[in-house]
Length: 120
Image 1 (cartoon, rainbow, N blue to C red):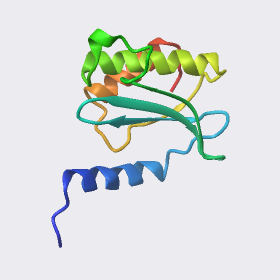
Image 2: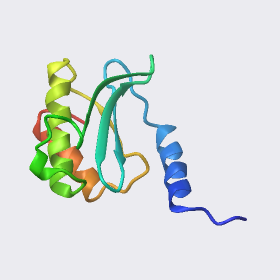
Image 3: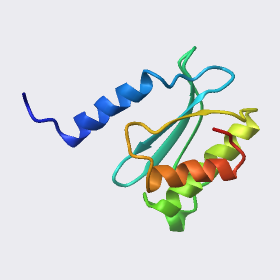
């Protein structure tokens, strides 16, 4: 059996999580993606396959002096996506950690979204 790369392992975990986590119009899916330099979050309605709201560390609302992918930046992205979601009438979501551990930047993003008023 061939050895899997870190990325392939994460994608396998992501597929396993996606079998159970599905975004509906009532509770869309909040998905997280981490890159080495930035962090991204989207709220997706899987029934129609559309992204309803998105935020990242590249957004204009993100403070320029905090640029980059660190825990503080992830928390700010979580707050931004939470505010945008509430402005669009979304209060409850299901959290899709994207195959990453619920730890560090992913956890900070989730806590930032909760602080902004999202429930999951």
